[in-house]
Length: 356
Image 1 (cartoon, helix red, strand yellow):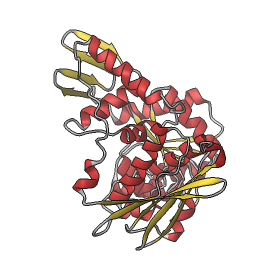
Image 2 (cartoon, helix red, strand yellow):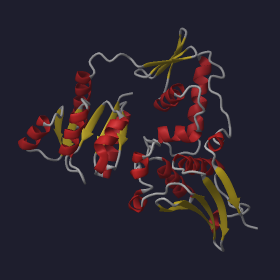
Image 3 (cartoon, helix red, strand yellow):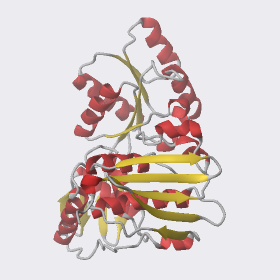
Image 4 (cartoon, helix red, strand yellow):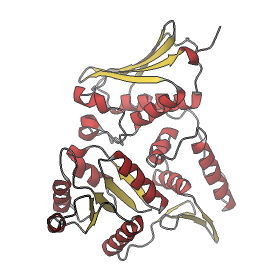
């Protein structure tokens, strides 16, 4: 599936264009990190960039110049500027095409296809193989022997990730991170349904038990990294969705491991009040810079820690936690000081508590 990186600061246009690209078979990646956009794009390694000119912090000209200095990735300028000078500047900076807003969506798609065809004229079908299974990414098909099944976009993404990480345990949180970039997961059972359908298709190919589910396999991560877990007052009753709370807590633990310091400790504490119960997750890690805290739940935001440490951050973990908390009627907040650790609080209101 071709990947397009969309650089657009108008949220409505970004959302509309992302949906259009997804509908026509492109995986769309976005980011709000305009100060480091060229680095973010190159790290994502897309097949094409759609780039606006009028952007905060660093305009599209600057980003295009930096991309062309370091890469030959195709760039299409998509902007409301319509002067000949803007188009001339864009082309001189190395842009492959220039499209003005408002645009006809079919013409935009045709321009994208044409630029991709010129940039990758002889690209062979992408095929991954493992244990007799062939995954054809360009056709979204799985094959074993003389049998072939078609895969949906989500099934293909799941199988691609599992094969790419063969021999490793892929957690539910990792799969959700990989799939939620398209904003398609809105139902609690969507991941389970997709995995079960994929498992059935693989069984139709004669590959029974190709996918194996192992519960509780996230905990070896803590042991391997020497993380000590402490608990306090966790006997306070609340009513919530256990599956999604497991996902949220797994994300928070993963962050504590990623951004740990020497002798890492994570403490879970419960605080009961008249109208609520608060769960706090506290670690003694590297902390979060104060300037990053206001955007910590923004989709795609990695902050300085995500960019400068060895940890590879997608900028989706805390975003997903916030979305799920909102969905369950909970509130989540972060308090942190750089160099002194992080405290994340989840508040369960009285409506979420058991009545006694």
